[in-house]
Length: 314
Image (cartoon, rainbow, N blue to C red; front, side, top):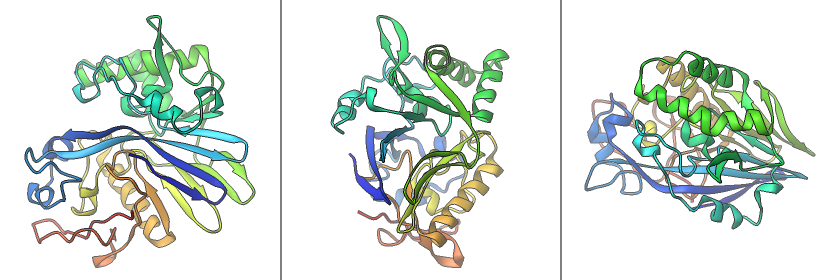
């Protein structure tokens, strides 16, 4: 599963680590009306189990002489015994990366929208029982708030099984970078790359985590965003006020999601999520009551939640 899209002079490729990643509806969105999920097409929900279908995507960007990788996915051989959907992958991500025509040595910048296991896993790989940087020549870019928050968690971990797997993530996917590679922290409005009238810029997007960031492409003819976990699944176009179980600050996450989707609709930004099981960017417009929607795929029946049209461009 992949697509390529040009944003100004930047070429963006979606690289899929895992095309089908199922989660129970209420496990992912505890407040959801399950009838909304049942009305989704099988691309987004398993008709037999009722599970929501997600994916895991990386984005590979060429702009001028600079190559960036945004969100490296889950990674192989990572022990996550308490976060079982993340546990001990054996995926062909490296082969899929090679199919882009690049090698890890070509990469200049590696950006993590946030430091959850499925967004920074391939920052490192296992070589002779040691974790080493996958992109040995690259500079790794972390949000300052995000990195400090994870380091504080590692220094004083709560007695929590999920936290213990976040600590594991730090030790196998972050600490080897801090010790063996070149890295920087960057904040809101940091320009990652620029060529002509096309810029790739970091934007703050807090809520899912305190330091979550978005990657925005700005050009005169077309703009886009890589949204990380600001939005997880197409069902979020259907149900108002829906928040994801893993959001650190649900109110902030909802505000960030609403603001981003409204920007996409009003400014024509293409939406490139981390987890939609799709082979195209999402085109967002304003629907009923002025709320963001993505028209053309499916109109859901009325439920107790305000519903809108779901669609994709492809």
